[in-house]
Length: 349
Ligand code: PMP
Image 1 (tube, helix red, strand yellow):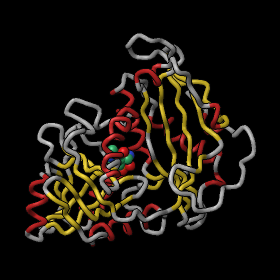
Image 2 (image 1 turned 120 degrees about the vertical axis):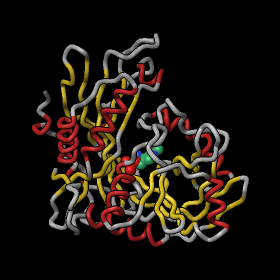
Image 3 (image 1 turned 180 degrees about the horizontal axis):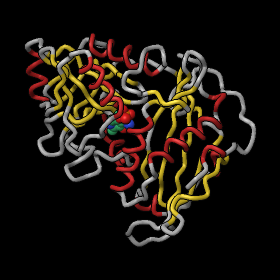
Image 4 (image 1 turned 135 degrees about the vertical axis):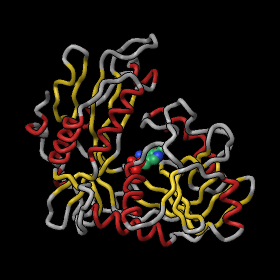
């Protein structure tokens, strides 16, 4: 379909800016783009200057938020060779998000080759082993200029990248949000769409004004069951059992969440995917049974949670806890290529 691996960058790569890189701030100069229409499917793949991957105000992506994306990492192993971290589940989630918004599905093999091509174009921007990663942001957006509400006939795929530091998230203080919801049953919660993030920002800003870092999202019906921790999946440890909400359609199926569960279960740790009530969390905290809480996601890997605030009071937690610390170390060792990879999570570029 697309000879992606033959693509070349339109110019030479400038030097990677010096650390600290932060997250999402130092953008790579190139973007891989391809177009889609019903007649030709995905076609015209090319690597362009990042500023050329753009769309216009009358496009359906701007008007109706027809836009989905992924976030995944490329890293440098100890020998200097490059690998992608779990690109297949990211490709599958990209496909599911696209289908949910009536957008075309990029086949998994093309997703992987497109990721490889844009990493190769930025080879010198993948930080040294152990020093960070190249974060890839594959994005699909509707490009048809039409103001009626219906699926777009044309789309563009664009992959932009950002060089990011390896960082340890400082312990997060979360505010349990009871007015706004991130997702409702039947909504977009399990798809990675731009609209989800648009819906989240007002409450996130309010949480910051209250002196918290992020929102603890709750369910849309009772505002009591834990959903997600900002832009991460949420885990708690109660009575020694690791627990995270089940994937009920309102939760983004995190690739890091899945890796954490696989790693914990391989080590014989009991993990439960089931509803967690905020009331139960308060009760467990009172009797000393809530030993830790943490979030998981591509950017921070594992982020310890230091506090959960709500109208019922603020639960203070020891952060990082033992589970978060060992999980982060275990995952990072596989990710960086210094531990065995029994699950086949590293994919050569
Ligand atoms: N939930 C939300 C809402 C997110 O934005 C993310 C980040 N993609 C996650 C969970 C974690 O997903 P992943 O581990 O695949 O990065």
